[in-house]
Image 1: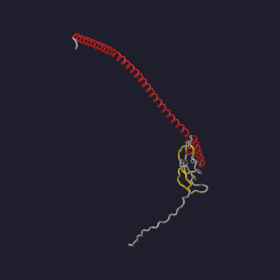
Image 2: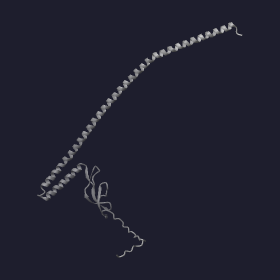
Image 3: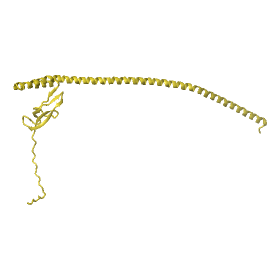
Image 4: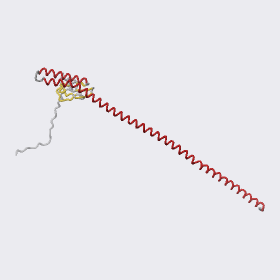
Length: 225
């Protein structure tokens, strides 16, 4: 059995151990409180630094955005000026082209007027004048890159020829050959300007005799009324 002294010693040891544990817990709580206070004191500073960095980054991004917008606006203005200048130059080029064409046609118009003024004096002179005007006008077309479309004796070309009628083919004019030019055609730089209206030789179609069909149905009698 446990004696009184032993019981007293055990209780004293337990009390001492409990006191030590209590002191350790208190010290631990004090240390944790100090850490929390230190962390709480340092958090606002870190947040303040982070906020300042974010504001600085935002300001830099805003500056870059303003620079990009300004650059874009300058490019847009330059493009508008370029397009306006190109349209003006194109309009001036078209106008100059018209002036060149009309200037070249003025002598032709003058010769036509002279031919009409002498129409009642000498028919032969009028004929020669009209022929000269025709040659002059053809020369003008050649200068503009316009050329007549070849017709008579040429193989029919649907890209440049328009068939008005056909005639039977012969040895001299085989099938699919242009035999007559009704209206002259012209092309410019290889592109069709006006088709030539022509008459083309065509081979005769082979005649096929149709076999008569005998009807087996009874014929209806027609009574005299």
